[in-house]
Image (cartoon, rainbow, N blue to C red; front, side):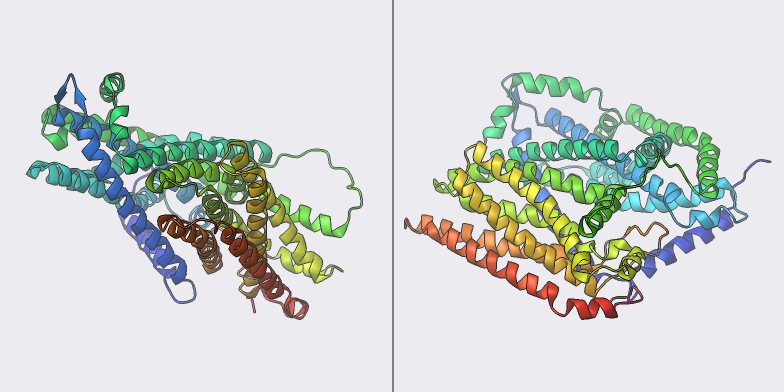
Length: 562
């Protein structure tokens, strides 16, 4: 029997999705603090992008080829490259959303048992995804096109097609995403229980992504320090970009339409791609939905098993540490957010150090590497330590099982603190070695930076562990995984960032002020401020952690916090 789309049921499913989304903003569920922080970061990022992309556009349009200015050619190349990046970003986002909506969504457990056709569920899910993609597409397209229009005056067609592309680009990304979703999920399932392989793959991808980010930062540095970026676009580079642009479909069609070139050919090509991708994606609806429904009915069980032996008797403290380590390592999202970020943290410090050091030295002609190293180490260290903000909550119902064991509360809590400190220490040590090896600081200064980072990391971990214990919110999922960041994560992240800015930022600012006033001999202030402040906050955070901890631990019940 042919599976038909029931549009009345589609509307019902969309209303259900909208109500679930709105419920997240109701009192008791809404993380207002985290919401404000996230949107503040988005606004800051967009403001910085507008400034630097506008500067880059101005530089690129002024590049000469053959000794002559060709602003229309440069504009065509620029739009083709930028729209390629937008489409790649949208496709990645759509694949992620399709995987989350179909394979990881909790409501699929209920929908598979209801009298709903696979096509009906599929269309309802795709429409929901389309709205999310539309918001992302509109933000990208409007920001890019407004910046371009501010540099070079555009006609009515440019603004009209800007609005059209906000609606069209999500169609392309979803159509391609629907085709990629199945192989992506197959790879994800393959890596799901191969924990070591997953950790290696995700860490390498994260490192590659941050390397590309460092390349962008280097370009930003060149724009801040002068027009050296202009000399990068020599004749050889421009010939390569011109040859590359010819193959950047469908972005070249978008550039043609925006600039009023080859409208018929570009329009037919773009709409042909949309209809073709949608037609092909519709052919995989049944297979995709049957795969999802069968996996949900079967419980999506796919374990790798090996012969089990009786484990030797271990110290209870290290057993608790092992329990936390395995809990993190065997949960994909935790591995990425916690361990992979910790491993990549030294690269973040190193790349930003190369950029920050050259900018400060170029602008004021003075070496402030120690202060920059302190600032970067504390800032990225605080981001690495964010995983300690779920030290209690991520245990789920397991926390009450551990509480019933004949174990002292100090072992339970400090096993978590020691594990977090071990991850932080590895990141901090590698960062210090990199900074000293490349000559940004001396080995003694690197040791000082390491000690300051460890003290501040210990303070953040102690504070976060107790704060999470006081506001524990256990997941209701069967696996206990925390899929939504709560208010605790936002608080710990902001506290860590503010502390790093207050300590690292203050010593850097003081050093810069003395340098501008041509006053020397006050380098010891850096050691004094960082040493005293980091030691004080470490002691205060430790006292906050242990204050009446035993009493509150024994009174703790219900998973609702205190």
